[in-house]
Every structure is written in structure tokens, then in C-alpha cells.
Image 1 (cartoon, one colour):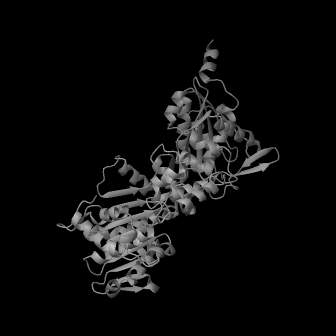
Image 2 (image 1 turned 60 degrees about the horizontal axis):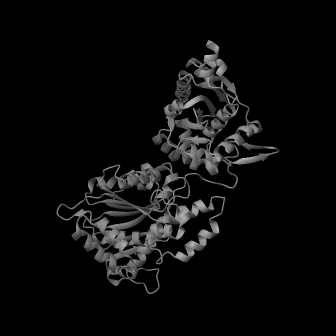
Image 3 (image 1 turned 180 degrees about the horizontal axis):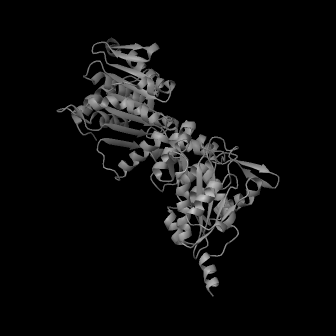
Length: 527
């Protein structure tokens, strides 16, 4: 349970004596905490080698649903760290996206000090500065919001990052965390503790990166003894809807204590049939079910079937499995994505296979800072390429089109007629005949292709690749009814990008014509 029991038990003894300030009668942690809490405390402080003074586990990530006493536990851990810390004039940081979020943990820690006369004699709580200072060695526990300017030069040995998921949408979060963790490089006893619930949007940025890494360590894909993940998630393949009560038991270690079973079940019944994303958000916060697609009331109907149809797929495997292939291309200005979508009709089954790629220039990350962490994540996945400036993006897109053409399975490439001059020229220069590049009318005229893609998804005949980029684009799409048609536009979809999805509709418009395999055409021609 702990690498070094001596270090662990000393911390647990102190932790157990702390009072819970916001409970009636202010009981001690020993009175109210379940054993899993003490085990977690043991793992944090039991990573310190008492002989060398070196902390061998440097990072911890606790992913736990709401109402499982996360703030109380974290306040206690940081207060114990402040009590045990032997260095002088050092800082311990309570860090979050906003000062208000970190203040919750600080308020509990301050209440713990005030509830114990011995601690009140040792520590000075300064509410106006949101700090707790050690009267003897001048160590201080303080609240800091995620602002790289305020974090510059920090030399903290211990850092608690509260609600890590909130950092996912902040462009400067990664550099700010590096500033906060900088002191650990010269402090061998230091550690960082990330506490979080699941995000109420598809994970992005530093939260996505840390969570993915934690899962890799947990699953044995990465060997990193300095990183300890504690993730309260449903096992793979477990369907929460078959036994929701059992699902709550698996993911909420404080069920029937700080978490009311009756309340969870009642709230679940209120949202289980909601189609506006309310069920997703509830599951994210109370079961740690990751949101893959953001569902809205005005969402595209195909979004309801997208994730369940996905399969691992590459461009090469799509080409190999297909008898005929169509391609869609869509892109806008400098702050837009350039999207490519490839649709192949599978030999033998007639199912449609889909695969996407997108490009953006670095200037798009600067103009759309809120989207930068998300786009960086898609770059890591290999589904998005960030280019220094426009030009290389079109060349790379043209090369992919030429690859399909070389397979002798390309039927046609459909593009948004607006501003496609450079794209057409690049595709032709790559070796694709001019007559294979056509314009696809946009606006209400694209309604038929949108509806066709919906039907393919609903009947299971369209199998898209397992790509976060497309889940994001599909989740961003918003539908506007227009007379006898439907309309999906970039304007209606707000700041979220849908270019790869629009490219899908362009490719669908061609594939819906049921083109003959090119090899069959060539055979007829040779006769």
C-alpha cells in the first residue's frame, strides 16, 4: 500500500487527528473517513524514502466523482504536508483554474487549523491573502490561480492542482503548470497531486494529456513508477444502464457516506431520457463517464449514432478494403481548419467506411486560444497537422488525394466551390485528373447529403474511423431547419469547427450516386 510504511503511518496519524470543520460537531478524520482515504494518504506520504529524503512517487492523479469528499481530503493532505515539511521558507501551492475553485480547499484547511488549538498555535491563517503560514519555519500554504505571470518564479515543493479538468480549456495551462512545478526540480522531497472529476465536455488540453497518461500507467502500457494514478472509472465493457446502482457503487467510494445513494438514483431518473446532453453531464460528474460527443438539443441527428459505429481505421486500410472511394474537401480562412474526408465503399458488404484528416496554420491557434488545447490534442492523435503557414497544408492534402488516385479506386473529389482554386491546382499537380475534381453546392442544397449520412449511420451501413477530431466536429454541428431541408453552417455552429464534417458531406454527396468501381470501368474500357 505504501513504499515506506514509516513515512506513511506518521502522516496518517496526523491526518486522522484533523477535524472536519464543515460537519456538525467537527468530528476528526478518523471518525468519518473510510479506509480508502487513509490508503490514499499512505500512498502520497509513503513515497518518501526516510533514509535519502527523496520522494520516489512524484505525481499523483485522483479521478473521483463529485461529492466524494475530494476537497476535504485534499485540504487535509496539504495541511499534513505543511506540518511535516522540514525545509524552511518554502511554499505549498493550492492551484486551480480560478481562485474561487482553489478557495474551497483553502477554506477547509483554514477551518481545520481553527478547530484545533495546537494547530492554531503553530499556524497563522491570513484569510485576506488566502494563506496559512507556519509561525516557526515560515513555510506557507497559499492559493494561486492559473496565471503564468503569478506563477513565474515559484519554488514550491508541494503542489495540489484542484479540478484539473477546468485547465483543459486554457491555452496557457501547460506552460503555467511547468512554472508551478519548477521548484520540484531542486526539491527531491516534492510531489504534485492532481485532483479532478471528469470533464463535462470532451477532455482537452492538459487534462486530456494527464488522464491519457494515467490510464496508460494503470493499464501497464507505460512503466513509470514515479506516477501513481487512482482512477474511479467503470471497467471497460461495463454498461451503466444495465445496473445503475452497481455502477454508482463501483465509482463512488464514499457512497452512503458523503454521497447519498438515494439522491444519485433520483437524479439519474430525472435525466436518463434527456436528449440535450443532461444525461452525459450527469454521468461525467457522478460516474466519471468520459464525454466523447457533445450532444445538444439542436445537434445533427447523425451524432446519436456516430460513436457506436466507430472502428479503428487508417487511410491505408480504408483503401485496401474499398472497391470505390470518394473524397470531400472543405476549408475556410486562416483561422479555420482545412478538412479532408475519405469515404470508401467496402468490397463485398457495400458498407461505407470513413476517415478524416485536417490541417490548420499556427495563426489559428493564436486567434482561437480557447481551441488551442483541443487542436493540440488532435495533433497528438495524428488526426490534425499544424503547419507554420498556409501552403504545406494544401500540398499534404493533395498528396493524400494522389495516394487514393494511385490505388485506381478514386471516383471523384468534391469540394466547396468557394475559393478552391489553389486546392484544385495542387491536387492536379499531384497527379489527379482535372475531371475527377468537382464542386459540391453548399447551403440548403447539401441537405440531401446530410440526410443520407444520417441514414447510413442509423442503419449501421456507415463505419467512421475512431477519431477524436470527428467526434468533436460532429458534436459542434448545429442544425437549422429550412423549408423541406436542413442546414448545417459554420456560422450556426459557433466557435467549434466543423470543416471535416462538411468534407464528409461533400464526399457523401458523390458516394450517394452509387458510383461503379473504377476497376470495373477500366475492364469494360479494355474490352
